[in-house]
Length: 482
Image (cartoon, rainbow, N blue to C red; front, side, top):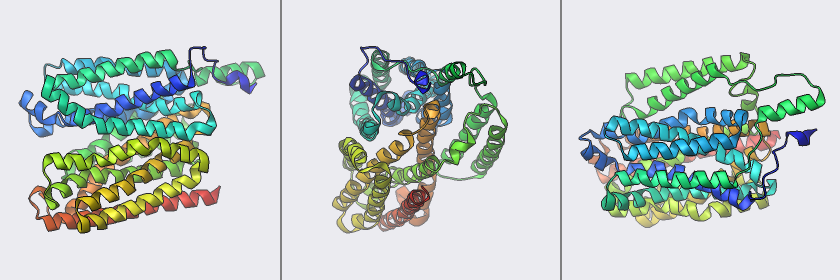
């Protein structure tokens, strides 16, 4: 009877290549929407006569919406069907992008970006979940590597494309491009992705066929949803508010997040159909993978937080040269993502998780040592070592989790993977930035002497290497427990 619960046969027009292409486009668009807005912040500050702290919410609203909602939309995809929810997400993203392009005020633009983030949450959560529906298991690593490549391309393309569009057509054009690409991704998803049966409907068919009693449909956990949303919002705000100053409000928000997490666990242990089954968090594959994902993302964020200061203050590079050097990482990611996925398919996910982490440790140590000795060449060499390790880890880690996950949980598990990455990025912004400021010896890093900035760089990436070592220990311990 297990066959009854499988995905409905896709129409002849659906192909694995077309499906993977549509998923890749969705990942590209959601990543592009993050980085393309960053370059517009100075222009928006002038256009709306607003402070930099105010226009930063154009970026933060998008990231906060994704962080808060990504697990929730993943669970909804498991319950109501992934294709309908992905179509809704793409439609929301496109409509919100168009609204952002027409924004008459900064407040309206920030609201549109939050709705855009809701659409992007569905796109990010459900693309990885769809891999299990559309790609043979033995090619899961390659598919995950391709999605990682598209994410890197979107991140790398955003600043340069945004700069060209703003110079030629004005800031509104960057959101019109998002709207157009979102519409293309919507049409591709409609055309190529299979209409998978909702998990709740499939389970009901199995129960009726076998005579097993149970709930006809999975229920949506509204209380757990509200608690998780409030907890994640409080945590993300505690890490992003204050522009590097961790004050009383940040501490209060962090305390609220901790209390919300405790309440969430209590509620999830009691409800009949929880948003996140606590058994998932005790899984010998998923739980370590989430922890490693968060640690690794925290470390990768350090390159974006610390790198610009080191290149400009310690090495004396101008804005254009700094941007060019910072683009090395995303470009390398784009080039090696698919290769990393194929290596995972050939050599196995578990071994490649450890190999990727070891490469990352070497890259962090190189970032601590080489730039001070060889300048830009040393920085570039270290990034070229660190980034393939990160891509190998991501492809292997995502494959290890998604290859064998129950189809009823693919959406929520995919959302949890994306959430752990986002939380790592948010945490890295605050924590690694604070470590860097501590090592430099002043909160005003822009005015610090070059020697102090170089010392902060060494200390920060020495600390980052220790975080990756912790992740490697988790990986090795997980393999021994299997």
